[in-house]
Image (cartoon, rainbow, N blue to C red; front, side, top):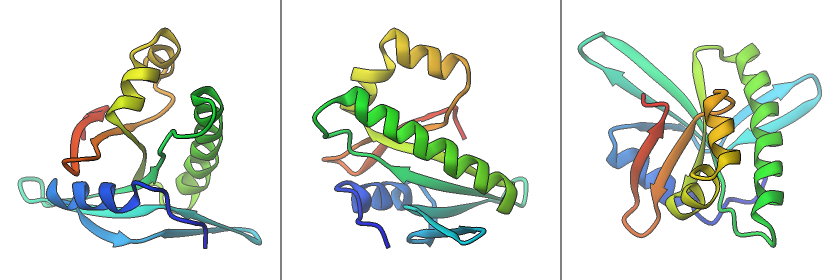
Length: 140
């Protein structure tokens, strides 16, 4: 089992506050002989449509020596999980959770805007101190 990110419990609580039920902590994936663990699996029942939304959430702190290095590693992990999840659980959407300050530093810049414009990833932007979700990109 991999070590938990600093904000693991923060994001977990923010999801619960936002009406999600944590179904997996962590969400285990196996492809061939390789085991992978996405930080959280969650579901939410949409009563109007009587449909259940399922998500997987990879939590990132972005507290390394270089935020570009952190971004490159996070994107590589995201792509790997995205492809395996698409095969094993195609209805579950993958999100990368990051603190609001990391979002502002990376995704309000041209490089981050390019990634969002090209729909390369889904983000959950959270406020660590309040354990709240500030933004879903794209919205759920």
